[in-house]
Length: 268
Image (tube, rainbow, N blue to C red):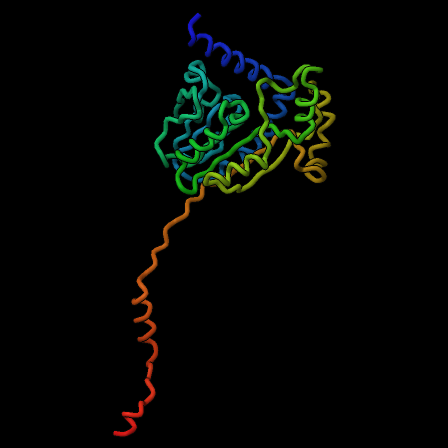
């Protein structure tokens, strides 16, 4: 078996496990909540070029008003067939999101649903997004929250109970993402937590936990199983400052300065 086949097969296994989990009751529950967040947010952003990287099961750009919307697929199978063909103008194969095939400052919106927690180098992905976004461009991220019942179930039950979330899922906390934003050019614009139901696997128990959504938003808002973040790229602009002599001359025009007479003048 060649080295290329060895590298491809694990990636396909991970994608299959992730796709299978998204089709389960908790996966559909997470997708439904995230879809509502993206739908209500992307319509407020204006520009020309919007890109979604990964998670074909979530059409995050379907309510976007930008004329050119592109879906970046992780495998060749999704390039020609994915559920977002009805509103995306094209698909691009990106096997390594750490190296984006876009020009510097060419995009207005980049969406990363559940990409960073399954990536080998999530910080490098954010650096690439910072590079390809124009000034005042937008970044949207969603992922699993480690400070939640789902995060505790995934971490504490390791080796004792079956994994609740698909492997490998390295959950990133919101404070950590904020630190990365500060190191780059991003300002956190808005954020929200959701999916407060306990880690159950059936639609029946998830439906019974629906009352926890409103209670969670009010009483423990940072403990939702999923977070949604929107950030804007800030670029410090140059401010032209005129020469000092120009400001002095304008001030001199506005008022007359009369020197007091000297002793020599008084003698005349």
